[in-house]
Image (cartoon, rainbow, N blue to C red):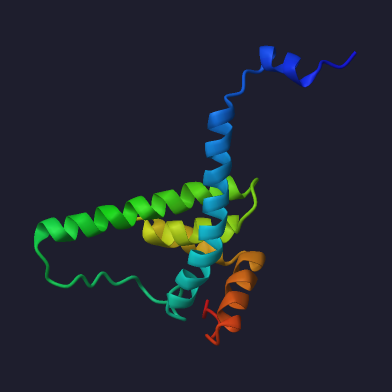
Length: 140
């Protein structure tokens, strides 16, 4: 005999308010990924994956510089975690992971970026977005 839904609540307690907030957060992340991901992919230079990374930071006050670096890494981490979640939830998971990794600073990052973008479905999706916005495809 199958248990009723209210009986399942005894074994698997569900907080209705928490489920509501998770639903709202999931919808927000999905919509944000649909808007932000194409913008970031379009703004990357066509030879981003071919050239050596150059760090040209304008001369700024050290506090401003550190704040920008921390903010960039936090945004990258949020996008990376959102992308991992989007692998099982609706959204552009692999593209979100790629953009998150592009923003985060960590050792051997360049090798990981190149490994990711060389996967045909990811490269095809990124180039499709660039083509739809009249940008040349990535030069790998």
